[in-house]
Amino acid sequence: MSIIIRDMTKDDEYYVGTCTHVNENNNEYEISCPRRISWLRSMEKHGLRVKVALLDGVHAGFLYIMPIEINPLQIQGRDLMIFPCLVSQTKFSKKGIGPELIKAAEEETKSQDRNGFATIGYFGDFWFMPADYFLKLGFKVAERRGEEVILWKNLNQNAEPPQFREENYKFKHIKGKIVIDLFWNRFCLTSDVEAQRVRDVSSEFGNDVILNEFSAVDQRILQQYGISRRIYVNGKIIDVGPEIEKTKLREAIKNALNKLD
Image (cartoon, rainbow, N blue to C red; front, side, top):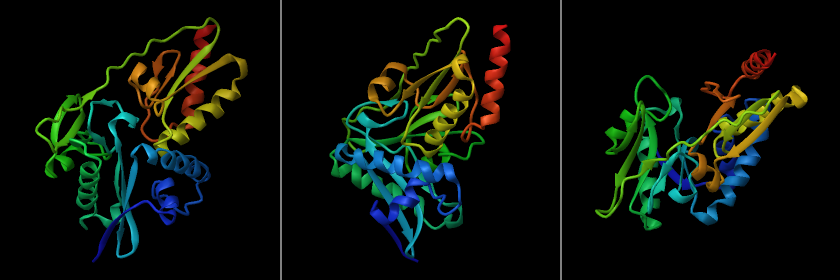
């Protein structure tokens, strides 16, 4: 069994751009893929790297890592690297893919002369970025907010632990209108696809709906609001896990419209 970790090549782009959903005939993912790859490539000059894992020559996972100054998550700090997402496919579990990607992330952190690297993980019954997994790999808790936690590895005694950004959202009412405030980022496939769904559904209601977009890959927006991904309908959070279903958003908009009468 041979594991190879490499920086993303042209041959890896489709795998990374669809977040492993290759050849699934999912039109939304297929359309999102080139948008995301274009953004990822554009940020390489700022230090972003995508580490891709191959197991016996087959794609098995990947990890994004980037300087904290350009990361789209609710983490702030300095002289650190951030990896917002580590993907290790279930069919390759227990093969050592995750630890090898973490090693590559640490090497990249050192090569960019940073003091440590961090991510956001989750405690509880949540499949995405499980905190306990990273704790077993030697990460420490920098800050916890409910079930959400910043985990980091300190590579320098002078390193300062990262912190959560403070959220600063205030709903601005517009009489007679439904206002949708969409916080999203192109980095994440789920968020990118979701943003397009929100645009599509919002357009169905014509002038009754005003859509405001806040892209977290714009650091000025992220610093101002401290939110990476969220949907508000007239100031009310619409709970999402995977990409929001269009039917759920339509229902939320219709309910809000009924309250205007």
